[in-house]
Length: 415
Image 1 (cartoon, helix red, strand yellow):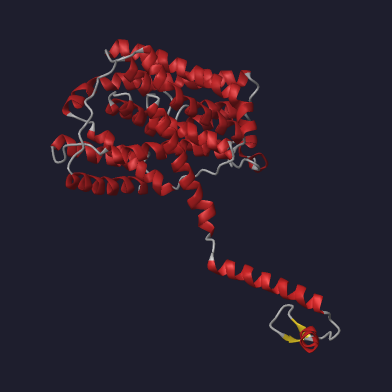
Image 2: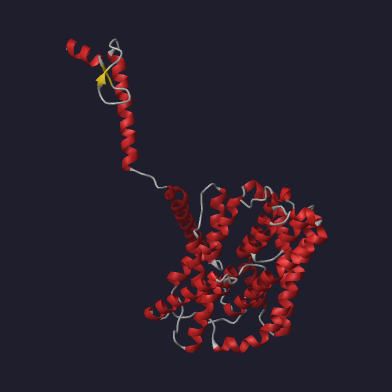
């Protein structure tokens, strides 16, 4: 036994395999501790080899799965509570709560594209010949919508300036709709990107969360009471989805505004009017699309903390009330002049996005073609006029040198 211990004492197990130790006087305790350290390093290497962690798992897959599960849970709760537009509003509210609780939530671009394509198809299948006959009154309604957009922008701009915001920031925070384009233009100016982003996101959040209840409150039971479309046959739906996807991707490639929604809408409307496909998408496809869009809206709040949200909540909520009040006045005038339901015009005039407002039209059983046409008109008008108008206004608000100064652009990262 003594010989064996003496022989083991002359063996070194430090970084490599067993070899003769350079220090023959090393004791048995040193050898044992070295063996334990070597065994631990070897086991850790084996664990790393056996269980590799792909970088996409933590940075991509887990946030997406968490967002979908949380959004679906919020939609189920709102659906069980009987709230209007449960899958969109519930997923958005649950996603925002999870984000401020520290949960990572994300949504990849390809899932957003799928949701937009399904939304466009569903909007197009709601177009009938009766809708085409009613479209004769839409030009007057769209004209009133343009006047309402100008009034909302001016009133919110004056409010934000009164609250002490600088004029470029107040201008971009006041523009209703077209969030991506507004943020792009604001980043090329001296506006405070944090305030602009928070104000725009708060407006969209409260609009999606509160507008369905407001519509049910001011005009219960009003609307066209559209019949819920029956899902079409599998072969026809598959053909429609394939052609609509190609059309949406083509318009998106051509950089057409809202191409992923507008392309499928036109294809589905053509199929519906011609009688090639009779029916709509099944609920099993539309409910996930609602959840995806709700989580997508919530994911915009990852750019700032809960403290920043609370700091801008007062101004953002006040701006939302001003915008909704002016939109309600414009919608009431349009409903009286054009002989349209107030609930329908209020939803079409609300300063939201094409995707969210069209989904609400389906959830509230209103005419999605009317709502979608007005939201597309708003988006196209803002996309064409906003770059020119904001440039001219900024030249009057601040000197040209200040707007284009690289020093002012530093630190304007929207993240």
